[in-house]
Image 1 (cartoon, rainbow, N blue to C red):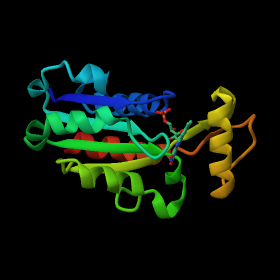
Image 2: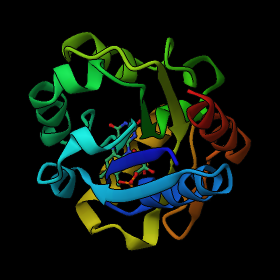
Image 3: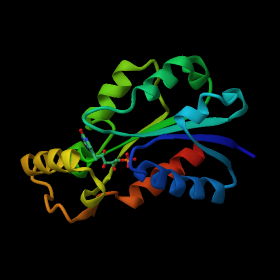
Image 4: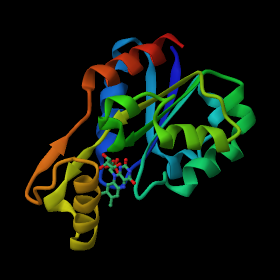
Length: 175
Ligand SMILES: Cc1cc2nc3c(=O)[nH]c(=O)nc-3n(C[C@H](O)[C@H](O)[C@H](O)COP(=O)(O)O)c2cc1C
């Protein structure tokens, strides 16, 4: 049975929701999935996994620093087996920025880490205005206003294309 590590980095939980869907697909395909945060993954024996996938969200232009740190620390192990990466951000709601090759955050991340995952993708995230603090809500509304996105502070907007997530999970199962 293929053992897969699925490590995630989230602030508001949407990347975990995406990972849970990927986990279900991998398990349906016969895999055994360990779903943990990047922090928790750091204390695991990674050599015990056949495949490793990492999902991380963007906040104010960046993934959390521990994502790159994890990749740097385990670069040779990641190179030794099938691996995958996906980013979750709101810019990816735009068709011209919703592929690994065209999303600025994925491009920047993969350019600076010593890792060439066999599979890389990006999924548009979720905005839950009522759940944000006043400073973040104001900042995000301003960014959305500039980029012609939704600005209703009472709105919850999910931009994730779940068919894309399913396709990623299927490709990961085949790696
Ligand atoms: C405070 C804050 C800052 C964000 N900054 C960015 C950003 O710079 N670029 C972007 O594309 N999306 C940005 N987003 C959108 C998030 O990436 C999106 O909400 C994602 O679904 C969050 O995933 P998570 O719940 O797993 O953390 C931001 C969201 C919040 C709440």
